[in-house]
Image 1 (spheres, helix red, strand yellow):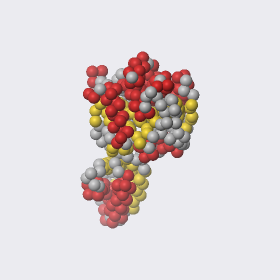
Image 2 (cartoon, protein in one colour):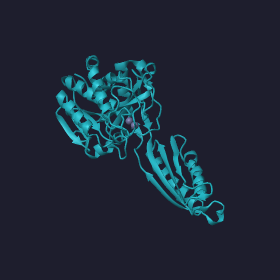
Image 3 (cartoon, helix red, strand yellow):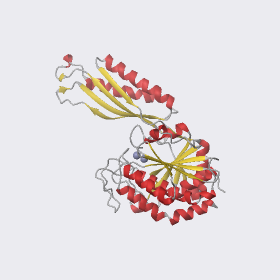
Image 4 (cartoon, protein in one colour):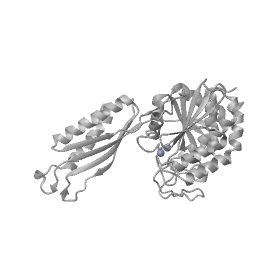
Length: 396
Ligand SMILES: [Zn+2]
Ligand SMILES: [Zn+2]
C-alpha cells in the first residue's frame, strides 16, 4: 500500500523535517519579504530532484511534480511562508534570530511540512497518476494576501488543479490529531476605519460644541444592530471595535474621534449588504447629531468554504492514515485566512494539524510570543499531505 510507504518515508525523514522547521523558525521573515525563505525552499526542492520551479508573486515559489500520465488530474498543495512582527519569548535552541520577527502562526511548520510532502511525493512519483502542484506562498498575514497575488500570477493555471489542499497548525488540538470541517469554515474579515468629526472646546460649554465623543458613542451602540437586527440568524456575523481614540481631557472635548473595528461573516452577499448598512446607520446618526463622518471599509479576505466532496474524501484519507480516533470535526472559526481566495477559484480543503502537548507545556495560542508546537506534528503534516494528494490523484 502506498499509504504504508508514505508512513515509512515520513518516519524516516522526520528529523530532517524538524531540522527544516527549526531553520525556518530561527530565520523568520515578514510578509512579502520572504527572500531567504524562498531561496531555502528552492534549494531544498532542487536537492530532492524537483526542478520544475517558477517564482511567482515576488517571493512565492511554484513547483511541479509529475507522476504517471501527468495530465490526467492535477492537485495543488499549499504552504504559507511569512512570519509576524512579534518578539519571541520562547527559550529554545531554534528561537528567532531576527529581532522583533517570529513564526508565531506556524507558517514555518506549514512550509517544512510541504517540503516534506514534496520529498515523499517526488520519491514515489512512479506510484501515482497525475500532477502535484506545490504552492509556497508569501504574505498570508497581510492584506491583500499572498494567495490573491499567486492567483493573479497564474499559479492556478497551466495546468489548472481540480482542487487545493492547505493545512494550518491548531494549538487547541493535541498533537497526533487533525481536524476537518466541510462547508463554511472561516470568516471574511474587513477592517473598519471611522472618523467622527465635530467641534471641540471647553467641556463646560456644551451649547457651543458638536461633541464627537457622544456622537461616536451613539454610533458604536447603533452599529451593533447590524448584527442583531439586519443579519440573518443563520449567518454568523461579528462586529467588534477595538480602538476608540478621543484625545481630549476631563474638561476638553476634542474635535474628532477615531474608531477602528473589524467586521466578520460567512456569506459574501450579506457581507456586501452589511457594509452598506453600517455606513448608512453611521451616517444617519453622525449627521443627525450635527457631525461629519468618514467611514472606510478596508476589505480583507473572503470567507472560507471547504468543498464538501473534496473535504469528505480528504477526511476519509486522514482516517485511513491516522485512525478514526485521531480525526476530529471542527467548529466554525471566525478568524480569516487567505487560503479562501483559492477556494473562490477551485475546490479547496483547509484542515487543521494538531500541535498541542500539555505535558510539555505547549499550549500557547497562535500570534502570541510563546507560541510553539510539538514537533511530532511534522511527521503527520508532511505524510498526511502527501497521502491526501495521492488519494485524490489515484495510486498505481
Ligand atoms: Zn496568523
Ligand atoms: Zn496562519
